[in-house]
Length: 179
Length: 312
Image 1 (cartoon, rainbow over the protein chains, first blue to last red):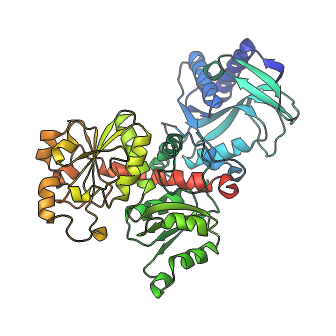
Image 2 (spheres, rainbow over the protein chains, first blue to last red):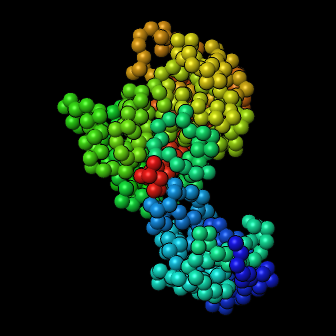
Image 3 (cartoon, chains in turn brown, orange):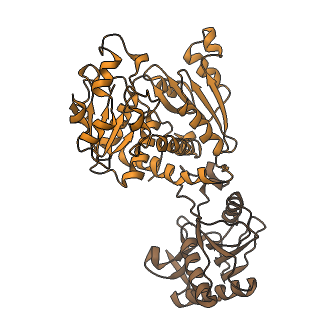
């Protein structure tokens, strides 16, 4: 059940545009930057960020897809794992990798993503871009770029809906079932 | 999507969706073989026991590599050089291994139903890596993955499986899988090597090589299973090879130009396949082997990497 809208399509696009500018500012351009999105919506956000960065800076950065299923710390607690595959068709060695995900919550997904990335090579630096930071961290992980800080209760769920997957661009808070 | 089984014993008991889950998972895992560091932590702390009562190169090795790439501890047990050689029964050996709490036991045995027997006797997940002339599910899965990669789809493809069908667990597992995925299967071989169940399983039967391989998308050649064969089924190897061996001339004369040549190995060169066909451009035999590791990773991951394995 949708409880409140956090970002509409315009606000979501503005947040991404601002993050793109921040990435260029912090890194002095888009040279040697690579985007890696976390399945599924992180990949879409990474593609949008890469397009914005290319439009602003002129230099285009590659975009890869990371699947962290094999690196989860809770495989035993879930049903049979669904592996959808990692696809990073470029070397991340000596690159500044901008890891992109839709929602940052406990930080465990990002912990797994860091392990997965480092198994693929030694990037010069890894930065973290997040559309919605909802708090409740369980690990010492902090994003470099944040679209929206959103204090939530643990019972709530934050849903990022993107046109490519859900037919609309918006971010909403949902009350989780059984709460 | 979704996998809820505790064991992988046969292709027969799976439905099309379960077969596709295994194949899709394997396809996603293939990328690991191309990495500099070929290891992911998914099965850290899990123990996989390879319990092999029959000879094997590809299957045992690829289960071992698959387990290791997933960070499981893999223990190899072969009947020779173990207490089986001192007279311990199969079930007793299995119970003793079970007492050491493995998470998955991969078993190969010459008796049909050996894997199903272990599934009843042991509490861990069981993978059938070949039980007599019954089934060899992971071989069928890697064959199917190879076919999909080369042809792009399953529905409507036609396959000829040629040779010693009666003694082949590979043929049986493949027939079940291919039929469930909408492919047509023709089995070809001398009448003594065609099992009575072929038509029951929905296969066409051809008693001449040229009839079997004409217009099919895939030709799967099988080895004569002489270790399972009683005397008198074929007059001689030479005659078998003359009528049923696939040479380049026969291939060019009767088969399509985009046909795939598959073989589960080990190849008896010059008997069922001439060397120029086995090593030729139509052959995907080594692709099959490479897919074997990905398929076995998928099987181990789905059986050992979830709570459902213990809950079932």
